[in-house]
Length: 75
Image 1: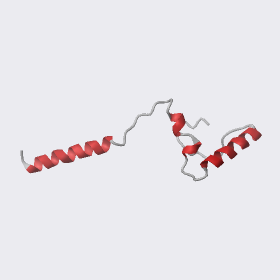
Image 2: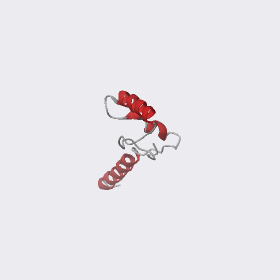
Image 3: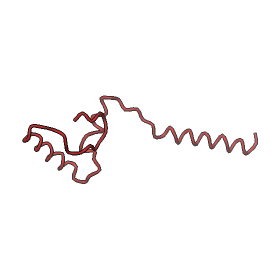
Image 4: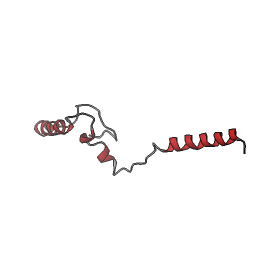
């Protein structure tokens, strides 16, 4: 084989492996953990989650505090 054909094949294999490395399938039962408030990028995520839970319990309602996370946004 010619060296340029080998380099082309190596490039295609590298591109294929690079494209597949970020793929992941997540089941519906696993999504609950991914949208947990603790998984937030904020440093005080646990404290914010506790405060929000207490506010929701006091007010008797949920939501209206932003749209972070993912999933179905049913909360």
